[in-house]
Image (cartoon, rainbow, N blue to C red; front, side, top):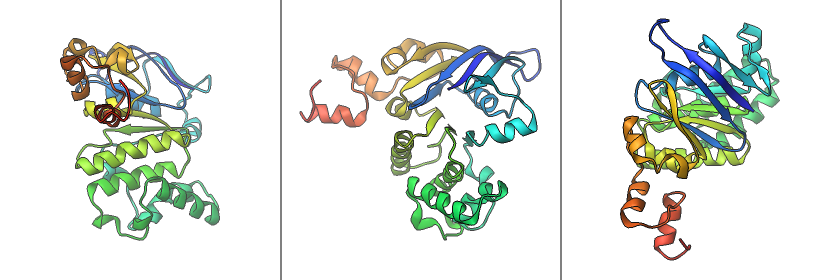
Length: 269
């Protein structure tokens, strides 16, 4: 398991960005970190991956504290890694399949192992048809999928996704949500940040709500997303499905697909 225990951090040592944050990222689920701009979401993600060092508290992985030495982080980041919001930050090679295999080459994997892992990552992200394409000709959404595939080729146990649907059209957003669920089913644990509250409701099995660097709520969908006043206090809006549920008084559906199945009579409330 991956854990944060009593993490505090400040960029200027005066104004706290995170205050006594503790989170458990259990395996087999998508964990969401909710919050408005300035709430501490991105800082939390950077501390998890070791890009920032907490001034108080500790990150634990598999029961052991994560050390901030170069050697320790080298091994840790093969199991816990992040895809940034802007895919351009993580794409370096000209051709898709070469870029996906870059990290494996740097880790001195054999050519046959690289080819196998790259193809598996292409399949998982549904971009096999793009493997020989120049990256410069890909759409923004396709570049995001390539960046994620590059991390998947490392076979991390935890994959952190920062605003994975930002800049995507509705079709791209839907495909990304489907991909995340498929990845979790295949054994990759996901930690997710997004301002898209409908996406977070649809995908997240458990969520932490941040406001001004502190956790003000945590739990599953029923425990977090129905607290509309608390979400508004944190600068967020409740998902549309929660608003509709509260307006018409129907039992809360687990996701959009489930809601429409119930409306059509294909499933009971």
